[in-house]
Length: 576
Image (cartoon, rainbow, N blue to C red; front, side, top):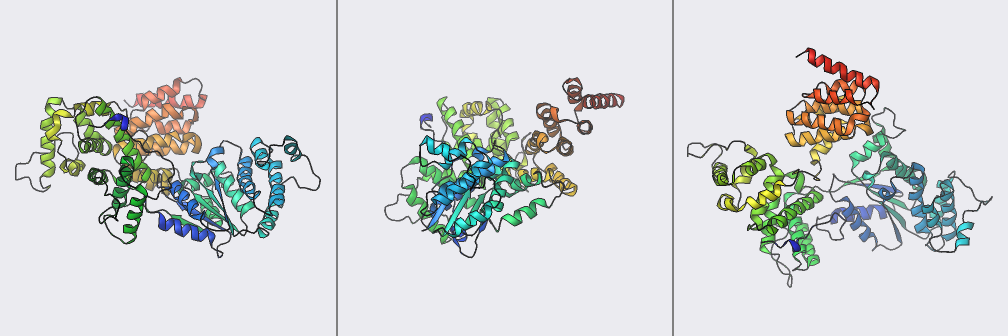
């Protein structure tokens, strides 16, 4: 039984321990930004959601700390994303200059340039940067007194900064920008402008950790893009010289990562030595990466951890095991359920509770069937389910039962895998009761990687791209498709209600679940953004009458919008 007090959850913070085999990428990026042949250079460190960009950036920072005559500046623009565009740009430039103030021979020149940035937007943050080395109030006041000999605009800043770097006794200044894809479109463009227009000179290098699709999305919605669909491509080409993509985890990588996380939680072995052992075997192409022989003095990982890691890697879907963040969220969600069930007296082993959570996570409709089944009938359901799953799919002559009602064909591999649940069917009630209290099996998990890519294409300015994405969206699992429809409508206010709702309506026509999600999202998120055109699209989705009535009765909406809803209602009544 699991002691809930010993429950260990995994945070989402960047790690200084390379459990993911990013060493080749880290070495490549570090070599590129230090190369005299790429000067200046901007590297885009890319991956999908939760792919480990922040951890990779942390590892790059650690590697660069070992290089002589290199200054590293860490920049996290998401922390000041709510500031005006001009101030965001000034803060990025200010962070670089503030770091250079401490370098021998650069103090005066860097302070002068920093005052120019401060004159653009004299705010508390910049003020603190200018004289971070002193608490002398009089000097702080003097720093912002007008000086006729010093310019107070950014005109000519690039040339002056270039002269400063030419005279610096430094090999490189390397700016690491994290979480760029979390920023608003205006902030993203401001940061890119700071890099390209003001800071891109010799001896400067930049590493941008961001999901490319989200950066393109931000650029395309900037005030300069207009209606040009190729604008983001041209813009990025001018800024990024070297795109580098983090490798997607293989199932072997995922299993190893999970086993290392479990070993770290157990705390019975030297995790650093274990990670080095994995790196050596990975480099030599020896599988399993966490296999024998182990170096002298390094205890082998617990057999239970290795077995659980293999069970998880085999049981979860590709969008989970290909993302380090999704793996951690899976483990955390399982751990919470496990602790709660154990605290309520569930006498189940870890493997059994893990198999139940894999069912809940990967096959939610099948899990609902199991939860809804009367306790005294669950044994028979599980027996026929497992017997069906273990029989050859093409052989019905051996008397194997048919697929139980309500159960999906896709669950065959899960049901056939150990451990058997039929033998413990009388003990799983407590776990199922706990799991059923969670309102959504996918809450907080985010959309799968494929659905995120489709979401971006559904919002594309190109109609052919949107049509292709709509067809792909209709091929998704119903619960994923419904979540995608909701996400589309949530963004109606940011990207334009007409396009978002029209596209969501086309996807929602695929099934009743998506239609229900569509109408719920319209009422919850989109009412203030409706136009008469978007009201017409609402009327095309099954079950529209209640939504249209809500629109027509909402006094705060524009009269034309409410009138369009009334007309749609009248039209639907006339067609009955």
